[in-house]
Image 1: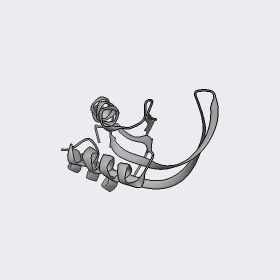
Image 2: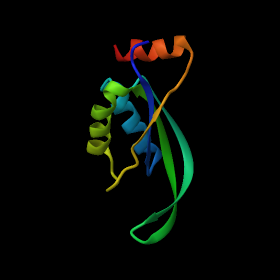
Image 3: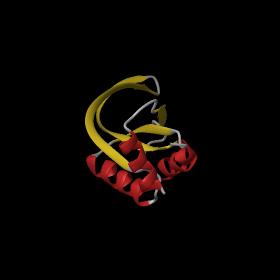
Image 4: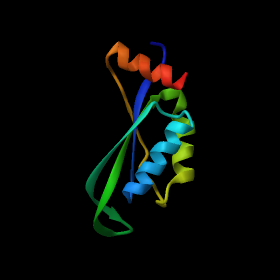
Length: 105
């Protein structure tokens, strides 16, 4: 496998935003899969501690698609400063990683 695989994390405010962003990412060929999980975030924003429900997107892609994915997220995100975090996949089954390659052709 010659690609470097990554998981990119981002959060959004609603389930609908999560679904729309996930579908647009996969449809644009920027990821093989996006998983959506509901959660509660406690964070500091503009000097105030807040607690809000959010939806976490776990985006499975390759490192060579990261820059385009980051731009896509920024262009389609409602937050002023969206979370965009890239984590390397340091291992995985050959079949699963091959499937990512196949999807991103």
